[in-house]
Amino acid sequence: MPRIATLLSLAIAAACCLPAHAQDAQRPEVAEAARALQAKVVEWRRDIHQHPELGNRETRTAALVADHLRSLGLEPKTGIATTGVTAVLKGGKPGPRIALRADMDALPVTERVDVPFASKATTTFRGETVGVMHACGHDAHVAILMGLAEALVAMQDELAGEVMFLFQPAEEGVPEGEVGGAKEMLAQGVFDDFRPDAVFGLHVGSTMNVGQVAVRPGPMMAASDSFEITVNGRQTHGSRPWNGVDPIVAAADLVTTAQTIVSRRTDITKLPAIVTFGAVKGGIRHNIIPDSVELIGTIRTFDDDMRKAIFADLRNVSEHVAAAHGAAIEATIPLSHNYPVTANDPELTARMLPSLEAAVGAGNVVDPGLITGAEDFSFFAREVPGMYFFVGATPQGTDPKTAPSNHSPEFYLDEGSLDVGFRAMLQVVMDYFAETGS
Image 1: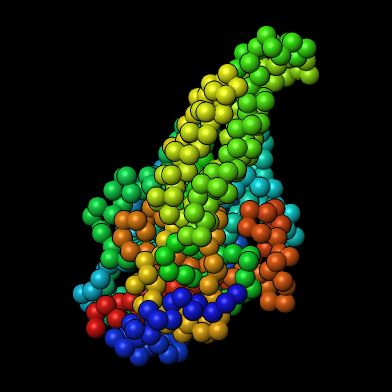
Image 2: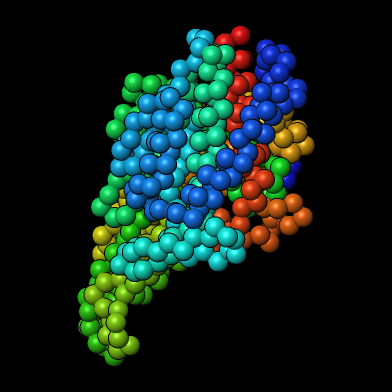
């Protein structure tokens, strides 16, 4: 991956007003805290990994977090957006406010990783018995933030600012008919009484080796919008299609024509976009043309105006292609469960780049490029300036291109990434307070 050339000019411009510690080596207090807490963070991560819980069901995880925060002398608030937990640490000196976020939920995935603490958990998901696994690394995020809370409480007297520890449920989504995640935490007022000046988050990932960190200013992860389109025709015998209206042919034409939305209607020299149909359902018998066909899919974009334009184009294509076949549509574009683009505040990212470099070495901070996956950290980063970065989780010596990806039943997290993530985030926090208060 290339060095973050896009950040250099901003970082150099900002460097003249940064204190020296934000530009040089890792802070000694960061290294000391990492050594002292490494074993605990690993232990917490293994425990959470062995007991995964789906979105809005993270009761055990939330209790573990809340008990730990209480043991540190903090006063956690629980039950936010169903199972979310927050606590605020007020430093001994005045300064800015920040929020640190970790997501807690697991996925309906049956683990196939041979580790002593592998998940054996099962649950019912959409009417089926499924395994449950921390296949995206949220167990690591929770453990790292628990460690950061302990480290920062130990430094409380010298801390020049306030920190909200924000443990979020349901990043991966919630069951139908429920609400949750970052959007719901905000709707319930998580930032009303504590309005942070900045919010930070991290995510472990298989696309990099342990020791690497990835960040970029501006758009980093795509907006994710699901859609649902029903093409309504008129049922008839398959041997006499002229007696009805065939929604299968209309739907096939719609899927094909919709590909021109990106290839012919969207200026992809600006930013990429994706329109994907994930399921086509219609008909039950070889010789019956059905009444209707259902289509569902996803749209990925990195720009709000492009996002809105694609919504309109998809509806336009759907209506007119269906009409050309004598059919009609019912469409929800987009569905209510969606994530906006995850964008890092350019100024904040430039300011904190030296901190990441100090934590892991300048050559280990890379630009991940645009990522078409999505994250609901985006909701927090739309409220206040945010910075979100990735921490490599694939063992050194293993090609990340061949490593099982996040969400795979074989996703493997090298626990060295816990130490890297802890050091990187703690360095960011300490430098942010030192810089802003200087």
